[in-house]
Length: 165
Image (tube, rainbow, N blue to C red; front, side, top):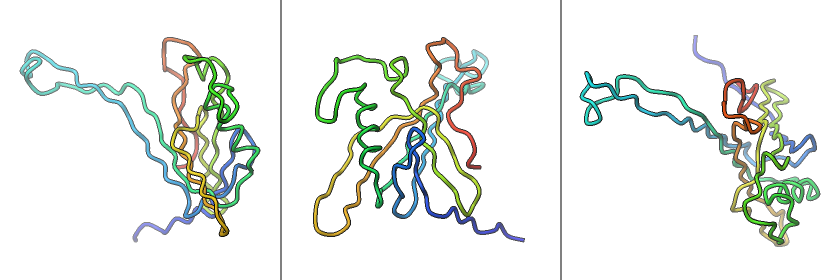
């Protein structure tokens, strides 16, 4: 028997607990793990092939084109991604998003599939496109989710996302 079709349903996207909008054609989520080769003398040393591989961390890029949008929630996402600076206004350089409380959860609902996913610590990354015209304007946004450690020097126990699979 083959694998069944999976239908997620309308991808309602929630930022910091509030409905941001609905994605046109759903969302695209790209998980990107970081690995590091472990070299051994018996495997040729630094010029050889790895004897093992370490998993170090992972982040995710979540891209979507919004059709129905709550602009107040979008402004909050823009402000948080700029460390509290109002849209168009630059804050002091170097402000930490995590320590400053600017990383927020992003939830992608799954009304039909029953497999919502929640990325715990996200921020909006560039570019954000704002087409303006007489037909419905589709705003493309991209978020990055990281494994925020809360200032600790270990990732153990931290999570990038929950649900979804």
